Length: 71
Image (cartoon, rainbow, N blue to C red):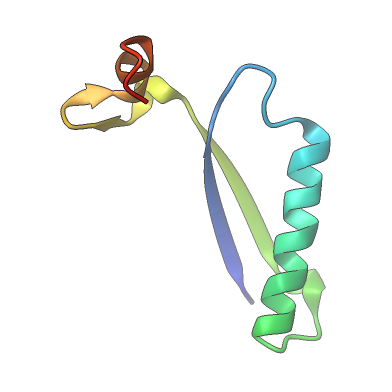
């Protein structure tokens, strides 16, 4: 059973419910094709939305970096 975990930034208005549904459907199809799996019903896709305050680069949160115009 494939288990796919997708992490994306949590942005205001993004991604929409429709975009997430499309992402789940498309990723499921790609994984089934590449792994030659016929049973897509057993493929699990989890989308985690990460707040930009909750991860960082170079000692600063992504929120701080974006506020500074660096990202």
